[in-house]
Amino acid sequence: MLVVTMVIALAGATGTIGKATLKRLIQLGHEVLELSRQDLGSPEACHKAISMKASTVKEPIGAVISCIASRTGEADDAWAVDYQANANLLTAAQRCGVEQFVLLSAICVQKPKLAFQHAKLKFEDELKASGLSYSIVRPTAFFKSLSGQLARVRKGGPFYVFGNGRLTYCKPISDDDLAGFLVDCLSQPKRSNKTLIVGGPGPAVCPMDQIAMIESILKTKVKVRHVPIAVLQGIINGLDLLGRVHAKFAAKADYARIGLYYATESMLAWDETTQSYREDLTPSIGSQQLIDHYRRVLLEDPA
Ligand SMILES: NC(=O)c1ccc[n+]([C@@H]2O[C@H](COP(=O)([O-])OP(=O)(O)OC[C@H]3O[C@@H](n4cnc5c(N)ncnc54)[C@H](OP(=O)(O)O)[C@@H]3O)[C@@H](O)[C@H]2O)c1
Image 1 (tube, rainbow, N blue to C red):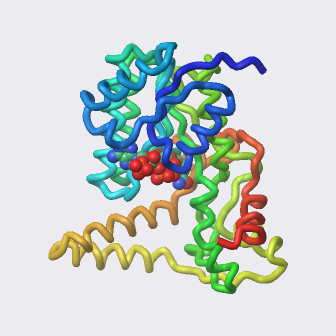
Image 2: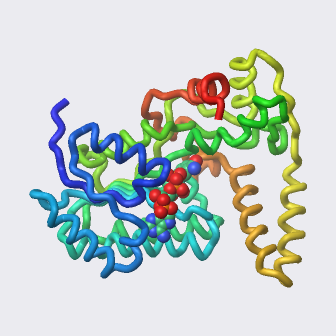
């Protein structure tokens, strides 16, 4: 396939998906100007940073890709990063005459309940109204989000699931497959001015399916601990009460609310008509499978 190379300004190149995107852009021969968190502090700082970096390359900047996100997920940080830093980037991109913007968003914004989801949605709306050609990519769960319990399970510890372990489903996507999709948005006109939900290859999986994968790799039974949703709800209620006297408990309650969201909402396309999550409406892209990632982490990577 012939790839027309471009100059790309990439924000978030130090993050999980940003790193994979940087790698893919370089593989394809694009010239990449990386924007750090300092560069995105204000529209003026961002404009200055982009202009300075652009002066070091021969071609004008063809597109911006944003893979930034709040590292903490706390409400204030989410508004500062998922909304404001992206808005700074958009303003600077417009001032610099950039015509295309690819945004990494998240599938969960389709049913917004949490601060970071509202922050992302507000920026998505501004991007759509900006006049730039845009691709808003809303992926399902990343491999890393489904791997947090592997180290404990490998040492013989339990795998915790909420309820019966079949409350939520997703179509896991690898960093490289998602990065490939983001980069392909640069050259595929049919992805222009679209909001694109993406899932990884293979069928939707729930936590019990993850356990079955681990058992097939380790060839042993995994201890499963079932945590009732009511327990998580009770913790949130308790932290909310304590949060009235100390802000640190309010912040913990917000984290627990994020946990409750992911314990009860699937990362699949939401169908308003049937009021249900639909695997069949969640497009599959890429080729890398979660079970192969698990095999690497459990058997090959001692970290
Ligand atoms: N985890 C999942 O399963 C999942 C699923 C769907 C969608 N998503 C979405 O995917 C996105 C990216 O996730 P990720 O895991 O790649 O993120 P990540 O590894 O946490 O990386 C975040 C990136 O944003 C940058 N950043 C943080 N604060 C910044 C600021 N104030 N100004 C500018 N840049 C800043 C970070 O830079 P520093 O290195 O300087 O901190 C880093 O490059 C998020 O929007 C997330 O909601 C995640």
